[in-house]
Length: 399
Image 1 (cartoon, rainbow, N blue to C red):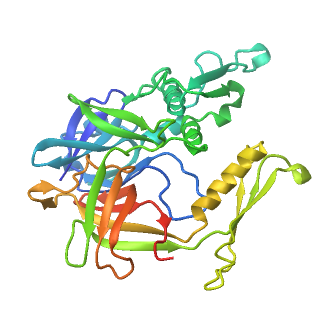
Image 2 (cartoon, helix red, strand yellow; image 1 turned 90 degrees about the vertical axis):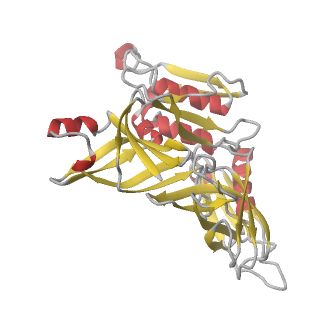
Image 3 (cartoon, rainbow, N blue to C red; image 1 turned 45 degrees about the vertical axis):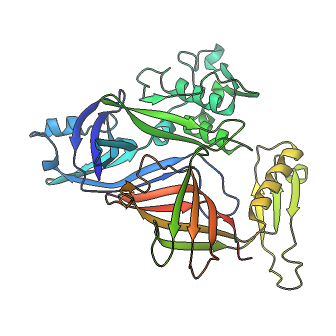
């Protein structure tokens, strides 16, 4: 079951319990789509379709109702509750965004942490436009691990700004590493906090990043979680075991999406016209097969910020390696309150996108029997107990 609480956006203090009759939600660790040439990106979480009658609020006047649901100032924490935990485990958090009221009810969007960070810029206080002739010459240089740099960026864009505090614990600040980033204040249009975090995650061997709420007494806090320079993935210490068969198992509604291979990638980097960096990566082994040849499939990769040929080659080869064979992606559904020997199978709060899953499949018409080692990329659902799981794309085992 689900519990929802109105909390203060800045402090995380709980203000009131609230009944949300309907909503939809999703959590990802990175881009989970079965597509070629995609960017990894950071983890994301969304809550949509929130609508509730005014009678759900402990408020009798328009002013009191507005005080409880003031956009930006108030947030919603969604918790999954079990019989052993009345308050529930925090799963999603978001500040109330645009709100639409009628005479009978109200509906609103929720802004996730990454959405809020789209409206924060990495500019030091009191320096922008203060150089001679109204210019900006200040620069911020950060050294350390990639997740340490990202945490420092996040802290500077929140705690270091007036009114900027959010209930986020920016772990890993000051963590040692071999990376350096410099950000010039005159380039403010490219210093959006959310973009900077995404860029760090998207670099070669960039870490997974995400935000996870938790209780800290009677308030909610949000942990910034990220992979390290040595182990870029989060959720690699726990292996969940799930089963599917037509005769019963811990998951149901199992489907498999398929996508063909890419055999050639035309990559372009910085420069213009005849001076532009170019590289061709190709793997034609499926095309050259005598038994079952594939038709040629080509793609284009472009990054105008890549000014070194070896880096362009590395990016192109990486995309080709990930797509040189036909891919498949397994999806299934699970009911969180289902039990095995009286214990919940995978209650929310114990399984997160990024975690490893061993999926035992037996008797499926489209897959050979076996144990499939997967990585959970996305969870989604609504106000019910049914959750859809999306796993990472992997080479088609039948090919």
